[in-house]
Image 1 (tube, protein in one colour):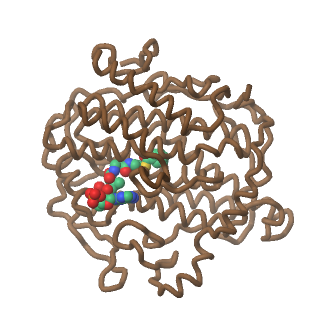
Image 2 (cartoon, rainbow, N blue to C red):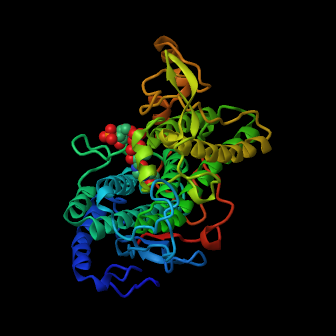
Image 3 (tube, helix red, strand yellow):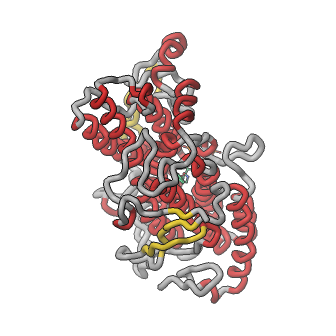
Length: 472
Ligand code: BYC
C-alpha cells in the first residue's frame, strides 16, 4: 500500500479507516513533538536540513531528498508490504499462518520485546542531543540529524504497534517511552548502553558502528517474528538502519585516514601534538563501545531467548535462509562461559544459546568492518592493527559480568586489571583530550575539522561543498 502523505500522520496502514486508533495516535503526536523539542537535537528547530524522507516502502527508490525543518519531518507509520501467504518459520508454530493479531498467550512477551526495542530509539536521540554544537562539518551534521529523525521514526513504528495491538497497556507503554530518559537516575532507559553518554563525535561514530549494529541484528531477529505487523515494521526499519551503520563505519574510517595522513606527513606517532586522534586512543574507544554493545545481546544461556523462539515471537538472524529443522530441540551450540573460575567452551542446548548465536553473527559482522579500517592503516604503510577485544572483556551482562579479562581473553587478577585498565579503556584524560578537539561546529560548506578526512562522496551525490544544513 502506498504511503498516504495527505494525513496528519503519514502512513501505509490505512490509519484513517480506524478512527479510534487514529485519534489515539494523533493525541500522542504532540507529546512526541514536545519530547523532540525538549530532548531532541538542541536548538535546531529553525535549521533547514537536507534530509531523506520515505516515499514508498519498496526496495527501489523509497527515499526523497530535500530541505526540511526537523520538527516538520513527516514521521509516520511505514510497514513493509504484506505477504499474504507468510507462515511462521520456526518454533512450535512453524508452518502456521503468520499472526495478524497478537495471540493472547504471547501478549506480554511481545509487549516486552516491542517496549525494549522502542525504548532504545528515543534514548539514542537523547544521547546525541548536544553533538550538533561540535559537528566536524555540515556533511556530518546532516548525517547526525538524519540518524536522529530516523530513530524518531523507529519510535513511531513501535508506538504504532503498541497502540494498535495492545489496548490500554500499549497506550501506557507509549507514554512511558517519553518519560524514561537516557541516564536519568530515577527513570533510566531500559538497556545499559542507552544510558551511557555520547559526548563527542568519536563516541558517536563508534556508537553508530557498534550499537546501531546491535539494532540491525535485533531488528533482523524480530523481522522473523510470527507476529506479522512487527515483522513488517522491522523489515522497513532495517532499510533505514543501514545508513546509520554507514555513518559509523565511514566516520571512524575517516578519522583513521586523517590520523594516518598526519603520521606519514610528520613521521610521528604523536598525532595529539598535531591535534588529531592517535590510533591507540581509537582502539580504547573501540574496546569500550564493542563490549557495551555485546551486553545488549543478553545472557549467553537464556531461557527467555529459548521461549521467544519456541513461541515464534523472535527468530534467528536470516532464519528462513538457515538449513535446519527450525525447531532446535535436539541441537546443541557451543558457547564460551565461566566455569570453576575459568573461561571454557561448552555445548549447551541450542535453544538456550540463541542470544549467543546472534552475538556471534554480530561479532563476525563487526570484524568485517574492522578489516576495512585496517586496510586504510595498511595502505598508509603504518604498522598498527585495530582489533576487536575478546567477548569476555569488560562485560556487565552475562557469564563474564564483573570478570577481569584482558582484550586477548586472559583472566586477570584485580591488580593486573588495575595496572592495565588505562591502556585498554578510555581514561578521563583521553576523554578530556577528545573533548578538547570538539570545537565549535564547522559550518562552512566543504570544510572539515582538522582531525577527520572528508568523505569519499557526498550524500545523494552532492558536491563536496554542498550546503547540507542552512542555519537561518
Ligand atoms: N541491559 O535472559 P536474558 C537498537 C536483562 S538496539 C539491561 O539474556 P533476554 C538501536 C533482561 O531484560 C536493539 N538488562 O534476557 C541501536 C532480563 O531481565 P529479566 C534493541 C538486560 O530477554 C542504536 C535479564 O537481564 N532491541 O535498536 O533474552 C540506536 C536476563 O537476560 C540487558 C532489542 O534489544 C542489558 N543489556 O535478552 C537506536 C530487541 N540484557 O527477565 C536503536 C528486544 C539482558 O530477568 N529485546 N538484560 O527481568 C530483546 O530481545 C531482549 O530483551 C534482549 C535481552 C536481547 C535485550
